[in-house]
Length: 435
Image 1 (cartoon, rainbow, N blue to C red):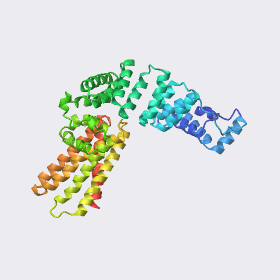
Image 2: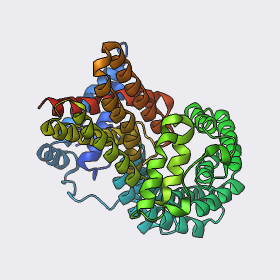
Image 3: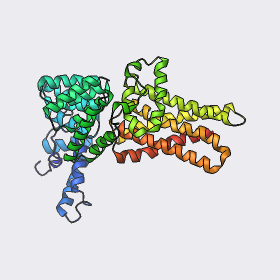
Image 4: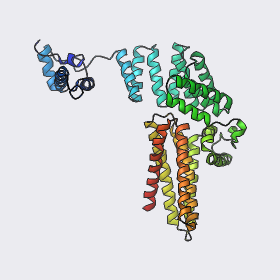
């Protein structure tokens, strides 16, 4: 038996390793010893052949069974032993890195069941829940974390993020302040507190926190986050009076009133006049009536504008109006989906409500373009093209500002996302219109 190699040892595994663990070990070792990566190393080539042989035998249940009987005199148990706390915790961390958040939550929960007072496992599960924006679960994990360690700054940071997403801006500020008092170099806490302060119209506090966040991010060489904080800072007006918002927070908490709709519509000129300065402040103002609802309302306004533009033809065709309305609705829906996909790929921190809001705002100049181009048809091709370029440029600017300020994407990610979001929407609009 001793003349038969121990293939488990070759792969660095125990006899009870699962097929998934065997596959994972083979991939890791194959990348390390592959001849293409070690062209002048004969030992690496020999090791690679041994690794491949081990994988061929152990990955096949029948060959593995025969091998175990020949090598060890018995067949390995088909049921591996229960994983240890350390194994579950390590697997949970790997799930976080791979953005497999549901699996991470499952592994961390099993680890907690084995060690109920495990601070690290609770923190890992809290991070996964935060990534999924499962805010109630985040708050539950934060409660357990603070029970185990009342001085844990990260717990207050996640608590504040959950409160902020739930609309409790004042409570979020309190949590972020507590996190900063425990860790004065926690740059993310300053940035997050600034977001909450913007929603509370505390512009001076937000400006100070954004400056501090940018400074700390740069010290930590987190350049994209530093630039993100500086963009939000540059977009803030100097005073609340300069904000000139027609919205009063206490008047827009009821989604079903005509007054709320009127206030949302009255905000359109501000968004169109200066999207870079007014995007984030107005987004914060709409917190009371639901960002997604406001975005859908803007989308409906754009759809209505596109539909009505058909009647600007001398012979208003109802079929054309129907097609334009359907095309605009399809384009808006695709923009929401494309924004969500871009946010996920860029690891942004927004939500589907933010995607609806960004897509709705970006649809407004496109609808205006459709109306104006119909009016400009008789004024020459130069005027028509100029109007079209204006509308597309303005819509791209809206998307860019939304990707950075609402979905919290880096500048490079936003620049890459805007063309394909806008292109996908226009492609769908064209296809539907030509049907």
